Image (cartoon, rainbow, N blue to C red):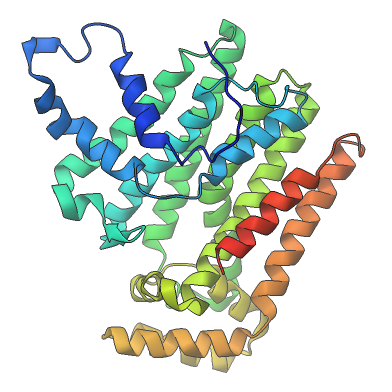
Length: 342
């Protein structure tokens, strides 16, 4: 199994890397039934590459590589399929998430279910989950470690689906104000937190770090995921280029961090009035007006909360690792992430 140096984002060449990987699958996978290759392209490979070829941040793959190094792995020598596995898993989750939200766009293009239809998109998203798992069988590691990695991914998928169930079922504008912060944090930790925590855990575990180091780096990844969701939720409100995402979250009543921050800080009547207005909104214009009100009321709080959250995560990791590793590359990664979200 080859290794690679991380000079580029794992997302930069995800589609061609996946194409090469699929062409290298064992004989019989694509020749089953004697079908022509173009039939498989139309049924599965094309839809998968459609999503994977879109520009993305590739953040989880890079976080996995940083975790590998923090855990003692040689820089540039991580098994090449490992970052690909986490990015493929993430891509599958985006397809499913878009279906469940009936989103119209993803990364500036029509969502896959709008482009190829719901049944094919749903199958593609699920297939990417299983493809991610199948990549583990091709890693150059022993059976005991491979089993641990399988267990890590299985537990993550379980948590992500629990969080998604809560996300889809709780209408934040109808929920009791006192419970909103807890709901938002729980959803975040089970979804985004679990997936970024998985990225860190896989990197550290594959580097054969001691259990306490794997646990500390995995916990750091989870906290990074919480901060990442804060960034995503907040940018949907205050960044005009992501306005559609913010309006969608308001229309669907999703439990997002702006609601959690307002629930903690605003008086009960002001919060109830805003929730009532959003709940009774119908048009995009009405939701957009609510978006602007939320931005005005929150002021500098989101930026301070996000910055403080990332700083505490780094500080905790430094203490857990006894200051024995260089965290500057990780801190630079987090700074770049904040900048990327505007």
